[in-house]
Structure formats: C-alpha cells, structure tokens
Amino acid sequence: MREAMRVKLRYASEYGQPFFALEAHLAEQARLGQEAAIPKPQQEWIILVESVDDARTIEELLRRFETSAKIEVFPAGGQLSVASLAQHLRRAGKKNVAAIVTPISDAKYQQEQLEELNASGAELIVLREPLEDWLGNYVPADYHNATVMLSNRNGKMARRYARNTKLDQLLTATPSFSAVIDKLEARPRS
Image (cartoon, rainbow, N blue to C red; front, side):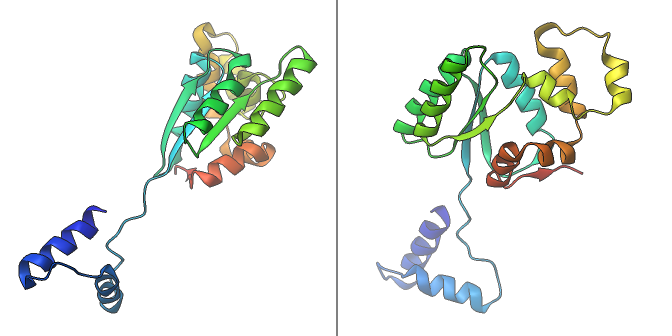
C-alpha cells in the first residue's frame, strides 16, 4: 500500500495529474523486468498451546524454521481452554489460527474439545502424547541418553528436545504439524 501511495503521489507531483492507474506502473515494472513494487503481505498466525511451558517449547521449535510469517504462540491456560479461545479468535476475525492439543484423560471431554476446535476452523495438531514425549521421540538416542538425568523443571527437557529433534523425522511422522509448517511457508534452517 505504501508503494502504491508513493507511486501515485510522485506521478501527481511530477505531472500535475490527480489520478494515476497502478496498472500502468505494474506494466512498466514488468516491461523493465523488475519485480512488482507492491510486496506480498506478511502472514500473521496465532498458535494456541495449553500452557506457558508449552508456548516456550513451541517457540524454541519454531526458531529452527525460516519463515516470513509473523507467529505468536499463545498459552490458553489449560487443555480445556484451547477450543474456546480458538473460537473466540476466529470470531474476532483472526484467519490463521492453529492449535496444538495433547490427550485429555477423559475421552468424552477430549472428543468435545476436538469437535469445538473443528467447528472453529482452526488448524489442528492433535498429539497422541504430551509435548515432551512427542519431541523426545525424534531426538538422537545418544542425546536422549546424555540428558535423561538433567533437570526437567518448568519444561526444560521439552525445550532441550525442541532444540535437538530431527526435524525431517518430526515432519514426516506428524502430518498435521507438517501441514501447518507448509502454511507458514517455513523451511528448516540450514
């Protein structure tokens, strides 16, 4: 939008004309072999997780990807709050909402939460195990053995796993997470 305004103002000041069609500017840019002057808008995503510790872990994991999207990882305040928060965000006009949910011990509540999340239109990443165990499945065995005796206070182990997980295996084994990464137009950092 800024580039469009700059082009229009420049044309008005140089030629004294109050109107300039942007199509003419874009055609000129194409003729010169340059990229279009109007940049693609940055995607904005909100990824909902259950707790503050989970938010730190997912942020750590996402740092290992390159993306131009603006991502906010937001703790919902518990397993049962994720669905209602996703619905609220979608009603408030947020288009790009994803939710990472882990198993709830009560199968009835689990099903209700998943139905609410599906109804909200949020992208779902449903894990069959807690976040730490999910990530721990994809760390090298020697790393796992070396860190098993370290402190796990405040989700530290999950963040260690997020920094050391094998991304290719994680993406292959978790199609729903891989689909969100694709929508973020992200790729693993070299």
